[in-house]
Image 1: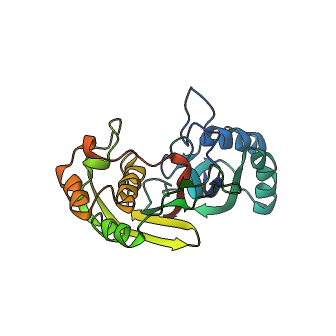
Image 2: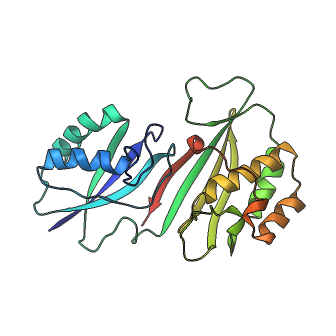
Image 3: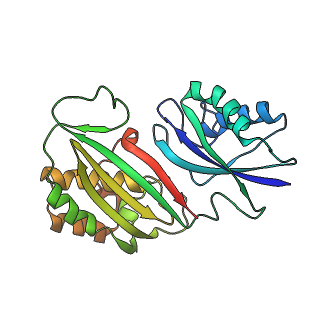
Length: 246
């Protein structure tokens, strides 16, 4: 038995999300279909984590097992991407792994990035790839608010009602806000996240940046641990699963 890791980039716009579902095409099912066709055996892939409908990835990690060795990885990548690229999915790398490697359970940290286009003009090149916000956002205040999210705490405020995680307690290792041109990039790193946690945190940071909330209000909504106090989550299309660390 051979175990392979694949690093995946995809545009999540036209998918129901990463995980296989009955209500539409998922990224996982699209990749499995092509791998099964190319490798001529039934392939099941296991991802590092789910992404919701509309969420993109620059570095999703997944693994699969197969009975024989893939000798020509160049040919494999070329063949798979020929079919997947039509669906706006690309396999960037394939790596040999020990049989006990698991894309999800072996992961030590996950990095998500959220992109806000902060200008008056709407996006053309970045349509469905950023959250377009016309009103000017106060970057300095947003950075201070982001610092309130760091560390180990109860993130119930930012947890979706459908989240099935055993505990709302997570450790946010890094939370960074920076501006590149007319884009604001918000970076979060943690071992794991609650469902909609990142988008919910970004939604709250947007309220702070607009001046709707001050830092005291942000601190209070974290402390209250109630979803009802959360700002509306940021839209899915600005979010990217950026990298998985092992």
